[in-house]
Structures are given as structure tokens and as C-alpha cells.
Image 1 (cartoon, rainbow, N blue to C red):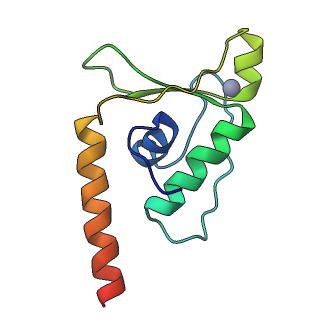
Image 2 (image 1 turned 135 degrees about the horizontal axis):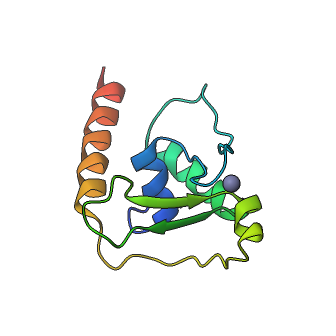
Length: 111
Ligand SMILES: [Zn+2]
């Protein structure tokens, strides 16, 4: 499995660089020593999904945060249900970052 821009977890990890809970100070434990790339964001996103983080795309346009992120503690505190929905369309911002990443990765391996 590789990075999937339609998976909100992958997309949010890419967009936010890492995942911070919007409701408390919890930060998803990422691996700062690994090389940054689409694989890296995919791993973060999928690990957050497994660990019970809630990531949802914000519906209102013009919001500062493109994604709603809540840690497992807050999910259970608010009694929320984590659903893993796939986007039908790839958000344009994600597609753009994705493309830039792929170009950067290609340049890195070519050098
Ligand atoms: Zn939290």
C-alpha cells in the first residue's frame, strides 16, 4: 500500500505535516528521523487510523484548518464514532502538495 490522496488520514498527515489534536495538547507521535516523503505521511496517517485518531475533512470552505483532528482520548470523551471514509475526489490542495512531493522525491533519487 502506498500513499492514497483520497484517504483522509494520508491527506491530513501530508497537509498538516503531523497530527495535532484540535481539542487538547496531544500530538501524534511521529518519527522525526525518517526522510520526509509520501511513504512517510502514508505511514503516519495509517498508524493514526489504527490508533483510533479521528480525522475528518472540514466541510466549510474558507476554514483555516482543512482537517478536523482529534486524538483517541478526545474521541472517547466526546463519544464520537471514528469512521474511515474515502474521498471520492482528491482535494486540489492535496493533489498539488502530492505532485510537488513526487517531483522532490524524484530529484532526490536522481541526484
Ligand atoms: Zn485530544
